[in-house]
Every structure is written in structure tokens, then in C-alpha cells.
Image 1 (cartoon, rainbow, N blue to C red):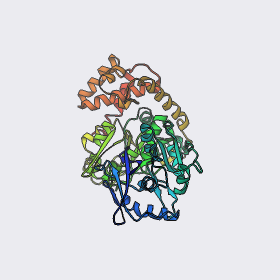
Image 2 (image 1 turned 120 degrees about the vertical axis):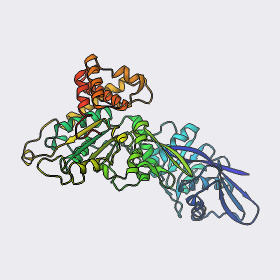
Image 3 (image 1 turned 180 degrees about the horizontal axis):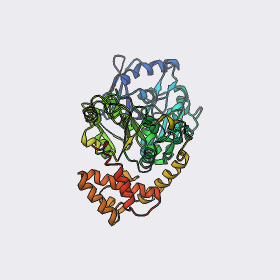
Image 4 (image 1 turned 30 degrees about the vertical axis):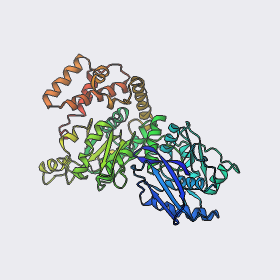
Length: 504
């Protein structure tokens, strides 16, 4: 007789169902696992053997074969321990033969039989709900998986608890969702002295999820401005929180099962590899652009990143998803992020500072910013020059609106966009608009249209730049509460695109 249990194998954010089949047959004693297992899955037999021994359960002196079906799907991770143990316990009549038929299980076993939390409980719960099964997982992972209310989630502390549950001796309680955390930002925009134009651009970027690059001398406040961006972004919507948490769950980043409503803010170092930024490595894991999904990817010292890494950002910026293609895996991850970049104007950093002399001007700036290709620069909606701040300005009292005030305006603009796109799948913010919809919702008045056409001809703007200016103008109008895009909105959007020093 073949006993069966059910679990999942992860391919990107998708958890694919896997059937664990166990056959105990006459022959020389052996314990083999087949079905494309990786090293961690193959080692499960020793963990399962030790865990059963800790419960005083001896394996029969027969041939034990575990098959992970479908056999052509690669199986990776230690979460196969628990379903393998369940199928084996059913096969040797410790548990009823059909005990695990309606259950999807995942969990790593310690040598003493206790269950260790594993990554991916949230996407596994989504698959369990789609399959109409109960999810059985380690107790520490239960709070995370319980956010999927379409299925019942049971958390166990040990394999002995699982046996008592299925034999009716001591049923396990249903897991409860972890607490939602909204982490307030302690950094305020008013801490930044001066730089009112950059603050305004930051507000527009946050309102419409527009990509932005800041270029200025060292110490002018570029990193300081970016660090205050999370404080003006609205909380994640329930749908966005679930999407973001599924990626974090795969990486084991959810703390005690709590799903945060705070938008991700990722800031990789410029020495990060292509696999770290885009995704890849063993198992084609998500990279920084996917971990920043529905949030912000801040890349300081932007030209210092390897050219190959920067060029890989071009397609994800446009499509909102990335296909990590490797010899043994093709995995698609969502990556709808807001890119905020910061750069010095040249290698020494003082090309645009009138009080200092750059020894290699203007060649130094052309060579340095030339590391950012034209097609990539064309994808930035907002290009801001951040001038140096005078020492006398540092003694002035805080100026401008606080982060709380700006966040309220950003939130209101996001609400307007949510109502506008509620019947349009795949579009949430103004940065996502394209095609006929862009012409419908962001068409400027006659004066604005005339100004935009003249600017496009005068500065040789690409079609992409033309459309991005319209999107930014629509966001500016939303911040103002204006139903239509007018000439002042187009003029301000243009001013962030054609700065003499920053434009590509």
C-alpha cells in the first residue's frame, strides 16, 4: 500500500502542490527519496529517522521509498521533513492511512522531534486554500500563515503533537494571525534645511510612484532626503501587504508571523552583485528589486554600481516584474517599486559647486554620469539637482511642511488615484498609466498641450519622456485637487525633466 501526504515546492512566489508518496516493501533495509530532491531534502531521511527514534518509534527492517510527485519538479528546502514523516507514519500504521489526505504540511524536524519554523508558510497557505486543504506547519510559522483566512491553519510544536492530533488524543488549536505592525518613521522632512525644490519633487514622487534621481555635491542632503521618504508614503493596502509579505515569507523575513503595513525601503550597497539586485543564485531567489515591491529601492552612489547591474533595471522598471532565468530555473517575481537614485555630479563631487574648482571640468562630469546610459536615465520621471547648503542655512529654524502634513497630501492623492483606477486591473498609481488610458486621464488643456509639444521639439524628448511628463503632470494635478491637467502642471513636470545639468 502507498501512503500519501501533501506539501508544496516553491517556484518564485508560487507554491506548487507536491504529493509525497511512501511505500514500505519487502527487501534489504533502505530509506531512499526520489523525485528530484536537493541536498536538504535528501538529508530529511536522517532527521526523520532520529525524530521517530526520539518518540520510540522504530522503522521496520524493510525497503522504504519516498517519491515526491511530480518527479520532474525540483524540490528544495527542509520543509519536506514533516510531510515525509507523515506519509511514513501512515505507511507503518502509526496514523490512519487517510489521516493526511486533507492536510497540506510543511516543516523542518529537529533530531529530537521538535518542529523548526520554515520560510514560505504564507504562499503555502494560499495554495492550501486553493486546494481545499488544511495547512499544518510549525507553531512559529502559524501566525504568518493564518493571515490567509480561506483555509484553516494548525501549528504544532513537535512531531509528537502531530501524532496526538491525528489520533484524536489531543487536537491542536487553530493558529491566529500575527499582529499587524505599522512602524512610524522618526525622521521628519523638516530636519532637512533648505532644498525646498527637492522636497517638492519627493512629494510628487511619493504621490504617483514616480522614479527619481538626485544629483548634487557630497553632503548636500541627497541621502537625508531619501531616508525621509518612508515617512510620507501611505501604508500598504491589504492587497499590497499580502503581496509584499509573500515575498518576505519566501526569504524568511517575517518577524513572528506579523505582517507589516509599512512600505519596504531597500538600500543596497553599490558593491551588490547582479544576483543580489535582480535575483538569482541558488534556487533563483528574489533580489532587492522584488524585496522593494510596493515600496522604495534607494540606490545611493548610483554611477558606482556596475554597468551591467544598472542596465538590468531597465526592463523591470517598465514591466513591474522580473524573470530570473537560470539553467535550472525560470522564476518570475513581482517588482513594482519606486526607484530613487542619488549621485555626485562627477568623480570628485564638486563639479556643480561654484565655491570649489573641479580640476577636470567638464570632462569629469561627462565621464562619471556617462556611466548611466541614456535609456536608463530616460526612465527617471524626476531629475533633481540638489545644490550645496550654506553653513548659515544650518542655523535657520526648520522650514517647510512636516512629514505628517506632506503624508496627508500624498495619501489624499493616492485615494484619488485608487478611485480613478478601481475598475482597471494592473494599474494602481499614475506611474502605471499607459496607452489610451493615459490620453484619457492625463490629457492637458490646449495651452498645456502646446507647451509640451514645443518642449518636446526643442529638447528632443523621446516618446517615453513625453508620456512620463504627462504622468507626472497628472500627479501634480492630483496633489492640487484639480480634475484636469493644465498648463502650470505641465510646466512643473517639464521643469523636473529638462534641468540643464541633470538631463541626459
